[in-house]
Length: 152
Image 1: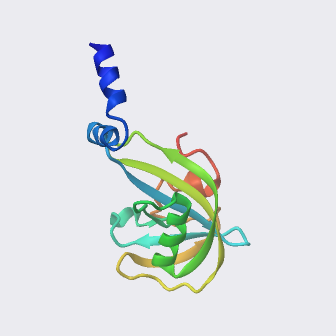
Image 2 (image 1 turned 90 degrees about the vertical axis):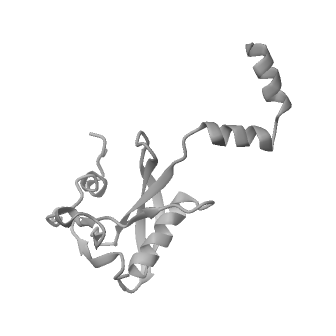
Image 3 (image 1 turned 120 degrees about the horizontal axis):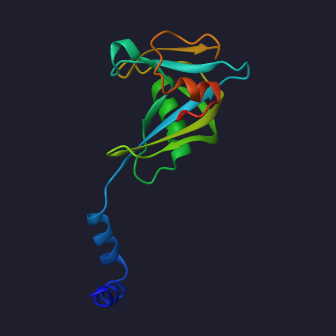
């Protein structure tokens, strides 16, 4: 039986094979976070309207769109949420294991722009020193800001 399946698999190569794989496997959204820093070391934190009231402060985040490089998701999300321009840096976090989501985080550096908050998603944005972070910060973002492994 295994030989027959293997033979059929080789015969249906190309688009049909990809369609079978797509139907048979889980689909994931990719959540992308940016750890945006200025030259003075301060980090950009946003108070997110849609997050729980006791945990509204966090890093700029969003979901990658089809065909988008994840580092460019950081650039787009920061621009959409704050009007600021950033240059993506190193990948600092990658985690799967969620039912339908993969998390990715990149360092990013402020290169320009003026803070203009998108009031639909964001209540406010401020620059914080890593040693003086606000109350109500998402705990999963603290290690990213401090340059530590978020997984422990």
